[in-house]
Image 1 (cartoon, rainbow, N blue to C red):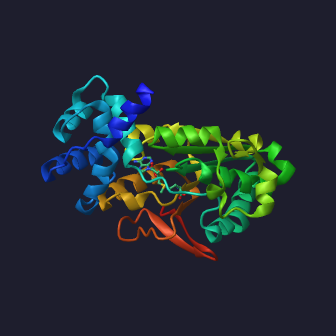
Image 2: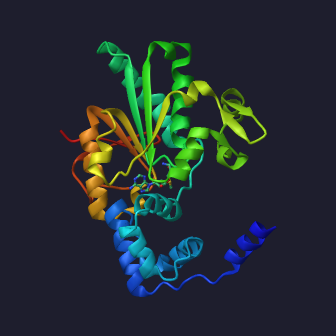
Image 3: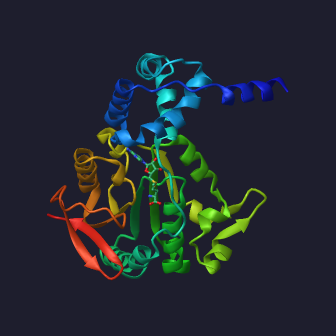
Length: 293
Ligand SMILES: C[S@@+](CC[C@H](N)C(=O)[O-])C[C@H]1O[C@@H](n2cnc3c(N)ncnc32)[C@H](O)[C@@H]1O
């Protein structure tokens, strides 16, 4: 009862006001640490999301919160919390089916054939900015669909990373609601998910292909933790970065990708203005990028 009341008091409490100067300081901090740019028109979003957090911490002003983020002994933990609050994690299984069909029917078979001819039955895929896991698990399902039983003869690794600990927690758990599966074909739902009390649980044979890690794409030391990839998926992530950070993140992908590898970006994400490191390949179903060597 006491807890319920105090929770209620917390939610009824007025949230602190964010001045323009504090907004500038806070968004510069976020930009420096994560590469994420938050324009002034989104100020109200920051106030909505962080106001409750300040009340939880009993911090009265944003200036004090910025000091807390920069100098308190809890700064590392608070930074993770901040990432949870400011990131946009919208995703679903089988997002952008046209692009995934291109991956399934053209890029993946070509890559598997090539690696087999080179005598290495090994394939590494990186899902960069994986949110709650729907994208890397979708790729795992597609690999099972393409390779069928012969998958046991392959060494397949899908590295999946995000900035938000809460999203990675959900991803590792691998249980989803109907909404996450809204664009998933019925036969795939039946084959790769078990219905549990908590929701749809992804099949362990897909789950074991994926390795989740907390990684900041804007941090070169972090991205070095990912082994060289044959294929990189980074969809609907670089839209949150300005051109300078896009350029930096794309150079990390260039370093990571094998010379004959492929990079998939989000449907609306164009990079021709940003870098010459990659050349677009126009294929049925969309554009995929290869390294300019
Ligand atoms: C909109 S979701 C896209 C998820 C998935 N790729 C898809 O297309 O469905 C963007 C994700 O990128 C993550 N993200 C943003 N900036 C990041 C960074 N600097 N490092 C790692 N992940 C980041 C966010 O936390 C968020 O979960």
